[in-house]
Length: 256
Image (cartoon, rainbow, N blue to C red; front, top):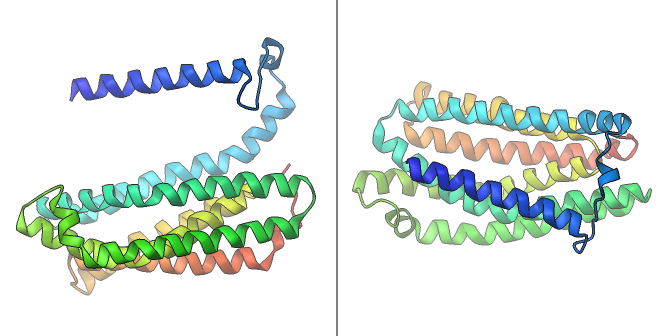
């Protein structure tokens, strides 16, 4: 564990130093000079205004995931193991979602900066469709080969059984999860970081955590109730996000 921790710190430090080097080298589109490091309080104020909701969003999500882990832990160590494996797989699945979301944020931001809100909306919906299609294709893998995927990480029959249920249920919502993430990225690109934060908070605290508790304990669905809570939260938050974005009020708002 100590070695892994040291390796993590060193890898991040080296990556950070290399990133700073690239910024000063200026061959990747941005070139910094010493004079650029002089504090500009007006710019900092704008950065804080835009960044605070996103920072709060990440903290609230982390807290919610901790609560969700607490619900899972009530069903024993095998459930925790299966949930951990499922989350690792989910984190891999989310990589292309987040990549597309980041690209959408950049493109929407550039287009909004050029005062072309209609094109920004077109970019957002194109990304939503692309993400939903890609993630829906991954559903086939989770539905046809769930046991094989879980077995790569753990061969315990009970863990595999719980993990298969996770993939079969939560996997059905990959497309909707992708939609919600890309919509959130689109809001950020338009400068409406508060909307992105609210959407993420509603998904986790409005739907996922309460539904997971309700379905697993009150309706006695066990761990499957938690997985269905995750499915419903992804589905409902995607619908809410799409409707919210479609209303188009973000086109009229100036971020800074």
